[in-house]
Image 1 (cartoon, one colour):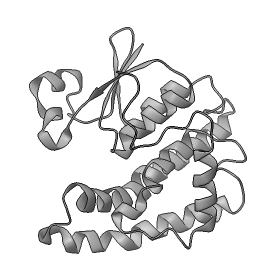
Image 2: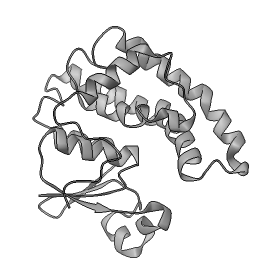
Image 3: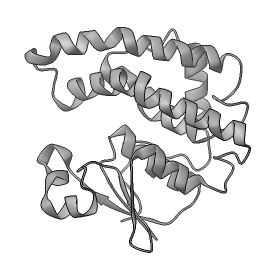
Length: 205
């Protein structure tokens, strides 16, 4: 039994929750309210000194932080993480893209708008995120015109990494209507028989 600490409407936390469900892995969900400072408590920092979620507790008591490290650990040995050395590197390539070229724009704009209510003091920053976000979406759309998923025709953790914030990008002001390949990809992921949505209350308590 894994224990997953997170906030389900955080894309990074949702990644781990979705992968666990896709793979039928038993997890215990522990909700952490970041807006209430619950990740900043001394108790939580004993688990993760970086005071961030998601955080995965293993059965042996060890912890793994950083969302992409968590999902790759959970997916190791399954079809979601290729064994081939090159393909595994391509998964990581897209995950680094997500962290450095996608999340800083799309996830941050969503946070400013959805979590903070687009305060006047952050409107200029919010506007500045739009160009970079659309650049990332354009790169994804180009790749998804060539293949069903980001790496060939099988879903991997690269897709989960990028899906988590892309499918709610409109909450950060990004109109996805012109990205047909992305929209088809979103529908394809959501059609998976074990798919669970971000807004669903975690089932494993």
